[in-house]
Length: 434
Image 1 (spheres, helix red, strand yellow):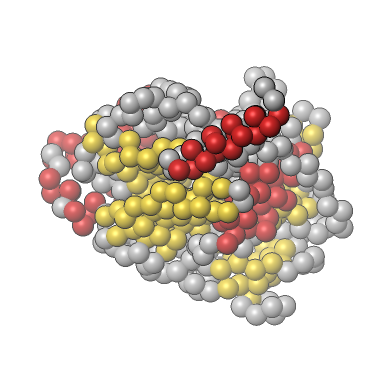
Image 2 (cartoon, rainbow, N blue to C red):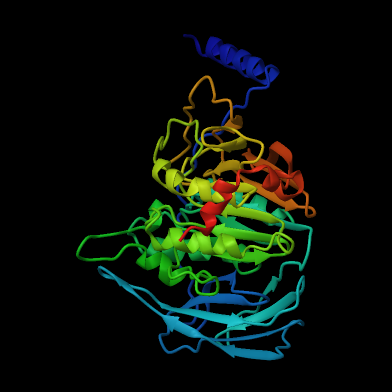
């Protein structure tokens, strides 16, 4: 075909697609070539923060100096630190790799909705973060399956432009996949955001890194990304819960035991029973492998966990379930037991943060009746809980470096809908069974 004819045909196809409203997906982007910054060995690197119980924050950082102190100085004015707190540190080895010293220090009590300035280890640069509000409205930024590609950077740039209080990540952080230095480069990549707002994460399959007889699973993840599992009565960093404003958030583990005889199952029942819907009228659950998925990728992988735990979430009136793993976006109607149910949770799959494996383009057709919106594009979500009854969800596609809002919906809380009174008592009592 002549070059001129090729150009004309291509142009016609582009005009046709645009006229029909079809989205032309950008090409994949390469893995970022991130190098280590040269800093003094006692200065903090890879700084990130996470919620650690009521009015407390965990500050995590790494130093090359194994003897650097695990202290955090902080206050509400730049360079003026009214408090100093000491913490703990750890390190790990993985085959021929040895980590730096990983410091975890919990500071507080802190005031709500307040900017704090802090310094790690007594030297180095000053950082700042803002605590979440005490009450509504509260906004979550959400992106799963991040990795370290050009699309990852685009996603992070878009999140940085939005006004949010907490970042939620439903698994697959660094895509280190046994290459431990990639954990270090990931820590540096996310530091500008993760040092300024709390990042609450759960594990995905790319965090597992298990080598039988040589290396335990999740060793790197557990050492670097300590979450408030102890504060929420859990015995494992792979599942925990926390509260922010009027929202109770449960982070579950898709890659640890979840059957009814497991510790995770028992902990989940106990945690759900403790939820006070007068204090926290919204109930969110996150884990990695989606239960409702009309994409051909990873079909059926969540069935076992769904069979064990979906009745618990339904009985507890969970409002929204968020997962990753499938490298695409999908939102469901309220659903339970495979069919639409006005008293079930909305399920959202958002494993499209920018991973190096690319997008999952193939969907089942026709779509199941519970599927509302689906698209294989990179992006992030924003969930604004406006008050005790209403929340606004939006998904923002990374379209040529511009964050395009492509899906949005108002969601009403189940507590305000009267659903708890409609449910069968025999179903609800599942939470009370030993």
